[in-house]
Length: 231
Length: 101
Image (tube, rainbow over all chains, first blue to last red; front, side):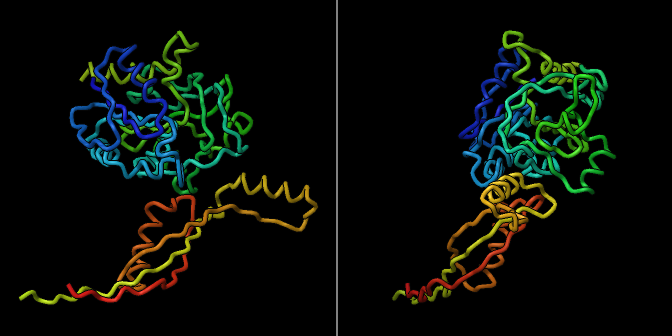
């Protein structure tokens, strides 16, 4: 399975992603410069965290117009996989691959922490290595991670089971106290209707190497690989 | 003999663009500023919403043309219609007289 990690000016999680896919999982991975639109050889596009184009204007607003992102829209339309983490999630909402928007954290602070997440469904490649309702601990690091969507969009997301991860307590309880940023319905990660595009604020790539204290995020990457082997 | 060609008259407009959060979107920065004003003693100030102000110039043949372009610019980049509203004022800046080439 061949991975591509898009590199924008200001990306800072791109190498962490490549460390997981190439360094730990041994999969061919190449960095895709934001001005490059030739990504036909890639199975999975990862839009990494960071501050693309300085996050000027709005997080992800300028990145969406890059040639690499325009090509990523085509890539997704072919049913291929797209993962956006943190700034990558913001970019995927800005470009319209995922509904809603990410706004300023309710408490205004930039939050750098570990947070329990409840896995809402495990019938997708991204989550097949987790149990349904399993609680995993994944780091978050963001100032604009408050997920917003209007009532109709939110209902459609819930009706179609597009919420993949929710902020919870360690027992999987969902309530406002364990919502770090004010996201509606405690949403931490969503997918598109088809399930091939996933966006999430927490960083699974920072929880994939035992050397840095946790591997709860690794299942997301290995799930993808297993699907590739089955097909 | 070179033929004289007349280019269309274009005008330059100054745009003043205001981007504001939609009423349904939480504005924690506005809430924080409001609490600062309360500490200053202004209990009578309410409903603070923080937005963005953007200036640009645009060259177009008509004001309608400039307005149409600005709507696209705002919808696609300057504002995110999911969370923000925008409005703008257009002011005629200068007129570029048609040139004979």
